[in-house]
Length: 294
Image (cartoon, rainbow, N blue to C red; front, top):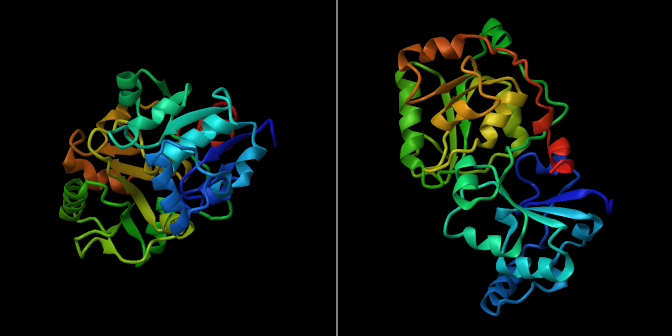
């Protein structure tokens, strides 16, 4: 696998990561590791090799997600990899907490076009890997069966400083008479909060029962979230607050409703209208293709 590219993430069990052989969790997370991580940061030292997942040495190149980074891991990469073998990919908006990781890399990219311009770094569209073996139902099937367990709009996501935005979109959907299922782990809102984390495969199964997905971007984010990719790959409509999506090459106004731009009086009509299959291929967004052509 030395000619292959690995994708280092903080949690290998999240999102589609468990279904992609190239996704690895680079450090062995434990209470003891967290102490060593703090020590490495204080002394600007590399993490000891004993805390590193040996699987990273099976790849000739590594793309490191910003959420997997730490000062100790950055110094470790400098010690064991040359900078042409590694790249940093921001899957989150760049802020004071993660900006510092740029110092460890020559090759830096982001999912967010505004950040690419601001920091003069590369832009790479968010990728996705469809989970095989889960049949996704169409709007027509849901309506024909008149299922009591189906929804008009489905949302899953942590608050991440967007509590008011999530509540605002939720209220707007309810006011339009839509059947909504919002799941916000750790939320202070009892109507939206869930206490037990939802496994990603279970969430994908829930997509079978919905007409639309909801996307709520954090403040300042112009790049699309995984919700947009899920909508594309599972052929579901999307309701979002991301005005920048109109510039995304995969945007289609027939399948995407932007709150704050589109006419709220047409929301019900949008939800009930069947998904329109786009002409554009999604191959460039397929995770395996995206990573090997990074």
